[in-house]
Image 1 (cartoon, helix red, strand yellow):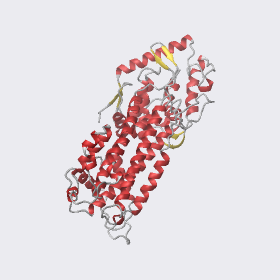
Image 2 (cartoon, one colour):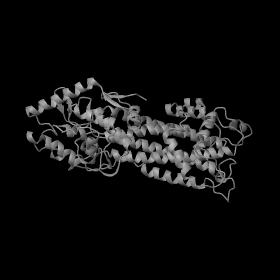
Image 3 (spheres, one colour):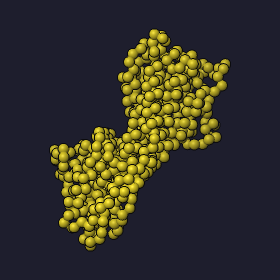
Image 4 (cartoon, one colour):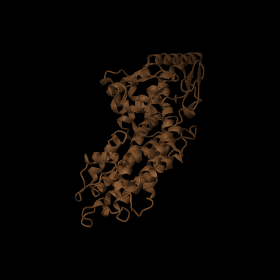
Length: 494
């Protein structure tokens, strides 16, 4: 983790976002970037002084772009923009999402294409370092012209208004007076949805790797074969993430006594798809995550406001449109819904006595008197169903806004909310699989699983004891799910 994240508008990474958003790593601005910011500001001021027509500087916004604004109304225009657009609704975004949004907004502004004064990104950085996080409602953005409402709520705090303005002053930070273009430069952009997407990409990869640990333990519990993970099979269909998936499974299952116990005279020829095809399915999930990661990584350092400043030109365009990130978030949601469905099918194979190759019904010590893991599998099924409903893409659900000026919009914040909900569901389903797989191994003792599976088993048992009789399992599931999200069962972190 870096000691400091230095913003220059071009080199921010997802790891940097996680470090600042969740771990409070300090933020600085590269000195040379402030020179670029100052130069872009001079271009805006010169164009305004000449009387050039510049959208959002001396015109109204959206459908009102034809309305010419008098020079003496410049400040009022920017202030009214922030006040009017701070109309978000719903529960507030979590602190890490707000911090990610703030970091990305500052990074975009220091590129030198936004035409703001250095004081604007400097105040955002000061707020981050002082841990001043405005309350930002989670609903009310369609993702174009950028995340207007979420960013406006951040700007509202920066100009000293509302309860967040009070917090600003309490930390000895001075509110800013917005000059020409600065309000527009602040709210035009994709930083709310992109900040959430960056955190989701990080979390999704942790879950993806952890799903392999759960899959390997399930395979051991039902005494499946690792033969389908042979590198030669996957070299013959060389999707990179499929190959990586198979390699992860091989490493987890290496040196398994359970495997050796049924290598000979096992009448089964092939395992079910949920066991045998794990690299093919999770490999495809990984390819989806890699696609989303590529789009998000590009967007972290993209100029997404409008108009943009290039040397002596101020150009209107549409970089604020959030379609790339909305699509990335939808892909994350679909990929994780697939991961969740696969995990639930393996849970069923462990608890169903018709499928589990000799394990007791529902992993109960006294089946009939006890129900064991019967209801956790039901809970997993319910969560899978919800994931599948939520996997419906948001990025195709355009509803025109602003008098039909914004006639095609991406719904990126909706996609972000859905993807986050799916990730939480999937983490709980993988938690149930980890608990069920560990319980299955109890009935195979004294045989030891593969070394990687053994480490996962020990990590599970450090949190949840074996099931020696029926007990409420909600706390166990939630604690293991929390560990899943924190990376406690990530095979690359053990």
